[in-house]
Image 1: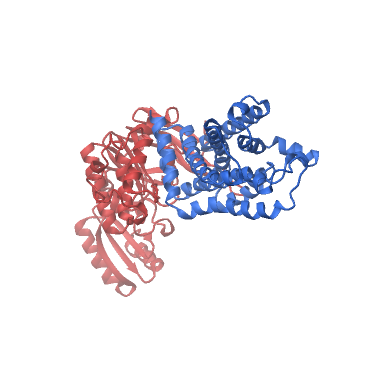
Image 2: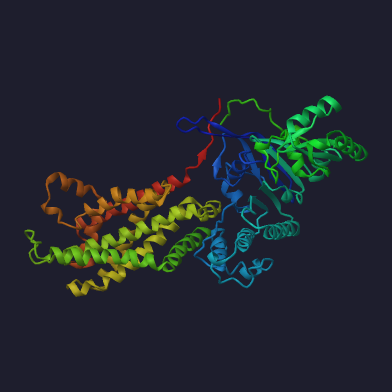
Length: 339
Length: 263
């Protein structure tokens, strides 16, 4: 449904700023009816990719087809079948819920009568708020309106750019639940960017990006299993000295992430004995130690090498290609892009 | 059908937003009226240009204020382009399957209709000055000319606003470009009595021709004007100004940032 081939985008330098590559030979194929989540830290190229996919940015090179239409040759055909939910609100706050919906329908050539607005809001909490002004809605309801507006025209492809930004956890969960059930019901192809890992857990496939490249692309469970069964996470008083000690005394290579040292890919029985050994030898140097099941967040930390500056502990993703190695372009060498 | 429906929807949105912001209504109507009353009253005693002895300054200035009203209204409408972009609304319009012309024309038409409504309210004052638009054909012509001029101002405002990153930047452009166009239109002083260089500047200003179009129906019938070569020449100039402004606006919004070649 969405096919991205060798997509490269380089932002022109301004003044003394050098040209900055945001996407490098990015390849991805999202199948019809698939729910695919793209994750990565800030500056990984997610937003650039999203802006290219919704036709607001022209890439340096590469091709994109959506629903069989070439995005750069027939953008209007692509727009007809695509709904877009932006990170920031894209509704008119001076208009009511119903007026916003009717306006959006008109932009897609439909009248408010042809599309039943009340029916379109049936699945939301906005059912009885058709005449309420948007500037009086809560953040969660405004996001629901955003989604309802995009679904009004029954798109076959839905693009979402960090749609839960600024929402509280309950509203976020509610929004994702609605999105997921509609996606399933309509067999819609969904491509969503996020930097919140818990949002990626529900996806059919998760793409992890870093520095404009695809590092990993697989189902959430496969990504987690690539990390091994369990890991031992140690929070020492001095990470450097404990890391050195573990290397010298036990021939272990812990991964540094913030204040933590992580010993990955440990079996269930080994993890317990490892924990006991570490505690018995280094108890005085340790604040806490735990055995943990790998989560998507840990996949990200693993693949990015656990550099704290790039990976806030809550959510970012990154990694080395697991599932789509054949689709990847050449790695980080930079070449002249053809137009 | 999608083109018509989307254009009407975008224009209608402009109108709805306008009436829901009372401060905009007051600002765009109040300021020209105050200008007209204060300047018109102040200059009435000393305004005696040769050949125009029978006209008071408040009457002379009236079509100029009508023009100013269109200008101010279009400026306020154009500022919403920047607001729409800042508030994110523009994104959803740009990803809709409509041509860029529809986006530009919908926005401009909405702004022009707001200006026209304000101008019609101001026209109510004309009979108090002894200015009448009769017969009905002449009144209809005046309304049409007001709409065309409003389209020109709004399109020009749209073109300037699109490139602006902030409303403060747009205000600067307004003061150095849009206001001088009005000042040099003959709204404040007659073109006949200015130095030759200034007259040349004023004659090349399309807004001068718009003022001619707005002033003459108060003194001549539509039938007479449509046979007047000077009037028709001014009409052509204004129509060309409108078309060029809309065309440049479309070109401007069609332009998308493109990635560069990387070496």
